[in-house]
Length: 277
Length: 334
Image (cartoon, rainbow over all chains, first blue to last red; front, top):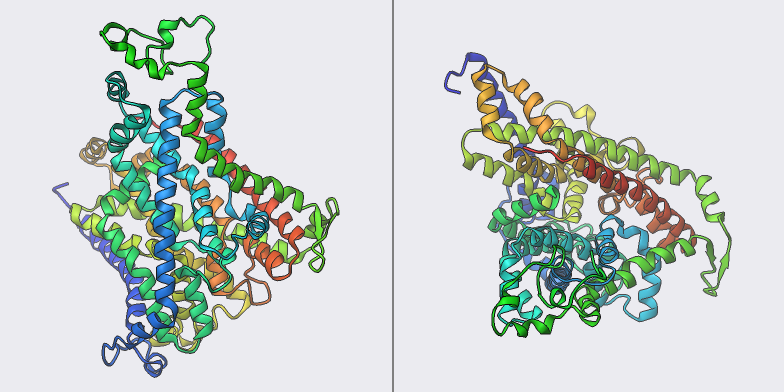
């Protein structure tokens, strides 16, 4: 490693040039998006590479008032509630699958984990009919239920894989001391699963915040629209007022980018565990 | 593993783990161990064990499996959108599918999507991950992985809208960039013409997703013991050969998984197409999921949409079974 030949040095320069070039390809469009949120329409069409004349927050305020605040509220609401229900039900099921003896154990775990293989689009038509019949079409509940149902298999899969490797002696000892199953789960197993719980929470937030197919089909009305769907309506409603659309895009993208950088460590762990097993 | 007839009562009440042979436990020897009786493995207690999985099972049965079964039924029906009445038409919807040129275009686009995604999300991402992991400073590695991942964190909708503008003929970055470097002749309405629209969408998708697969490969590479690389270096083996003879074989499991996940994802593509072209121009960017959506929810041909859904189901199921078979067979040991 210490004796870098001439070729090695050249190679190193090329590698760095390539990696940094790729950084530009990734970052420049994102910066362009942020900059365009500060421009006027005339500036936008004048010179796409130019910096905005002045950093005016007007477009952001405008986007906020033209619906983005509602979309944001809906997204936050759906994301938080579905994260709680999904992770909770999944952790509960994972505990059952790894710690509790039950009839038809194999069939049950096949049923839950088999859901991993199913594409949401396949159930789309019947689900619309079902939710219409239940009066849940165009409501917050439709998204909460669907995000939970379709993410339980993946989330359970991750938590279960983690729980299997945890030592059983601890919860057995707790049982011996008279703790109920529920207490054991809540006070002992779940805290030991903290790393994987954090990972699954992050992965679910990323999913729910960005989900589009269900959001588009099941909240066709204006009553509740999440950011991904809201942005496309912003686009069609104010299609010529591009800077406002750009501002809306930045508002939608920023929370997840911040979340990702704040939790990168757990995130990578979660991804690694999700794919590695 | 359950219900052995020879089980004695003391085994049953021992409270020992359930998938290992009953052993002497503290409960059996300690005074006051009788409290464990609460968890006695009676038939009732075992039935009660189902309570743990009940919420998940009920939600999945009602909202995932039932619709899946209903979909097959729907695909053999024709809907009258005015009266809402249904009529059994057998395999007519599937016959219609075979004669539908847009269906074949959509299927072809999904295949193109899968092929290009494997090139960029698997092959190129693996090389990229190896390059990043070969850098010396751990901080640089982290920063680069983080930056490359950002497009995957923003939603496909935001990325799709962003590229809609980048491809825009007048204010878009792409045409203006081509003009700036003297290649103005290449400028064109990327999403507006049949010849370039699909490839443009796929290109956006690669931009959005390569950081995610690079991150996963980086994680897989980190699991390879560094001694292997050090030994190879001492033997004077060059970087390219180290990559081909150490990295590639040892991340094989991840590669196989990524290929399958990528293909499966390519057959479910919806969002990016919907945001950027809605399937146009002239249905040239239609994929199975958007054609399903259009057939069902714009043209109200629910039976036909259900038939397309069945095709997606069959394709993704085959891929999933291959994945199952693959992950069972291959276990890389270090």
